[in-house]
Image (cartoon, rainbow, N blue to C red):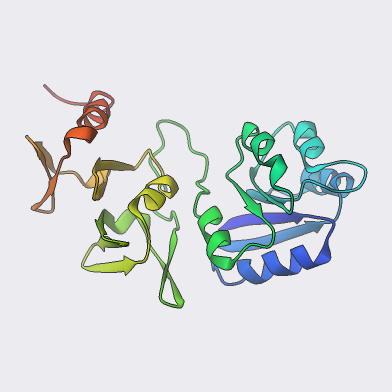
Length: 232
């Protein structure tokens, strides 16, 4: 469950974000603040995983709030002013949503969130990721995901015993998946590194399925192997 809070001086922004969040079962709104001073007090008492943060607020801006926090949660900026985008990314935010934004754009931003883990801690088997299929939103359990294949303007998510096809570019999918667990190995394929059974020449094998290894991606695969414990 991702615990989120909204910090925005516009009540309509709270209503929109909460209505979007209510459509995702892994999100839980734990607080609403309408200015940065109120948010400081709230955040000192309430653990929060993710902030939806406006920039232009009375007295103190969203950036002033970020400067005041010793331990910052993940942040998605929500603003009607795109000129703050560059400074926003200097704060290592997850995403910058320009108001008004759609549910699809909101979902893309939320999918960028990944819980913080130590380098030796394996990814959570409960990691959650949602994709849109038609008018419905399907959860992709990341621990079941084997690979993703680009098929024109679509992507096919191959899971254990089933597959899901979505209208997405593979470059978008790549930007949203945790790099610690997934690796682009071809212009048309991303694989779950924990599911790789063998690598032989220009092919990667997962559950006896041969996946091509593209020339452009060989260096990243070699880097992955060099960072993996092996018995030579």
